[in-house]
Image (cartoon, rainbow, N blue to C red; front, side, top):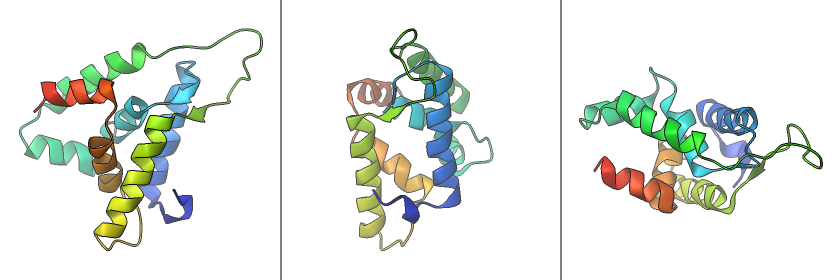
Length: 134
């Protein structure tokens, strides 16, 4: 994915996902970290869209928070503090978001493209979550 094509909000979401992974001691930015970041801005587009679809956003946030809490943690000798990688599942979602933006003839990758990328490329963990809220 070309990071130069990210909107300010989508770049902020990716940074927030990275920060969350670091705070929780997770070695990788997983899809759940990115979803968590997209849900955190109460004035953001994604929470508003979900609320408009009848989804109880605080309930979804709590479920995503529980998934973040369960991510593998790394600490101790040999672990480089602050070093976090992008998981292959998250990379797939980011690449799918870029492709969706292109299909929509959008020049930049916005938060809605990131969300659609997460929906289209959902790993097993997010697929189960989505079925709960579908």
